[in-house]
Length: 391
Ligand SMILES: NC(=O)c1ccc[n+]([C@@H]2O[C@H](COP(=O)([O-])OP(=O)(O)OC[C@H]3O[C@@H](n4cnc5c(N)ncnc54)[C@H](O)[C@@H]3O)[C@@H](O)[C@H]2O)c1
Image 1: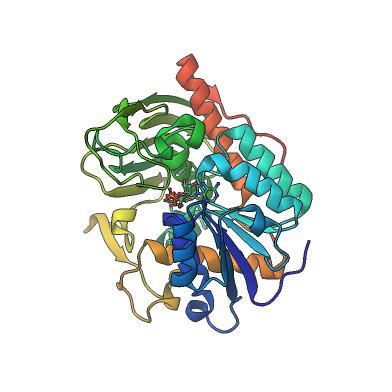
Image 2: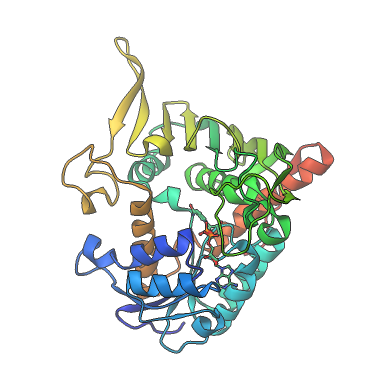
């Protein structure tokens, strides 16, 4: 494994929404986590739209900007490559970065489906580089606390799990036909974009799945075409030429875990109502909890006594993982980008220690195997086993 410098030298590829978030996050790991935390140096940012690359250089303090991602994976002064481009580019960039011994943080979905994800996983494993994946909802302090509660047996044996990710970013039929809605650029739709988070969360809380039956649907079949480099998946533009949506808006599944727990998963990108309802409910023989990202700084704990029976709200506080790096007292609110700062800190810590942690490409492959079973079930209409590969 290649030795990294201190501070860790970071290159970010793709300066859209996520590229900007990762740049801000890497810049503040030491400020948040103290002088013993690994520090990062923002060396180079890339976007094939030159104005975005240059604007990011000047706004975030990168030492230089480029328009060709190869100049980052080939750069001698880069230790870590952060991949925040559309999904179609992930495999080529990650394989080239691994071949050059760069540690890689790739946004989810890592590959467009299982075979690409396996290829990326294998490339990083063979090169012996450390990988990280943007399953950021794992990093919520109360979620990390709930994970410890479940692992300690506080809820007893887990019997029921309901996971969902309901967002409305595609709810307007005049919303732009960005790369997310096109199978060749994105791979799957709601499956890779949203359900991937739901599956990863269930893996990290409950464990692996045994089998499932799944359905999908595309509610909005066409959208206005936009020029590359213009618009995001939140942009709208009525009129003009429309193109076909070639992946799914909605996925649901009835699942069974290897430990015998039963569950349901649902993800939708065009639903009216929820803003960002990434959520779970867990029930065991001794208790229950529920949480939603829309109220990220609290969770509901089932209280079961003679006098009080029902859910009680518990606020995030300094006893929950990483919370104290933000606030000394409970019930102060953290937000989405704070999860990315925790994520950057965890990944930089793994890189500086030379130890692979979670979530990495092995976890992304586990998620992709479940997604494959869902896609097989859409075709067969039947229950499909989750087939786990060696890794
Ligand atoms: N973890 C999360 O919560 C989360 C949230 C949003 C997006 N994502 C993931 O992050 C990735 C990026 O999503 P986004 O919303 O930031 O997309 P985006 O469209 O906002 O940004 C992508 C950027 O990449 C640039 N780009 C495209 N092709 C390029 C190339 N070949 N070389 C260099 N730059 C190129 C585009 O110009 C654009 O600036 C996707 O994989 C997405 O699924 C994860």
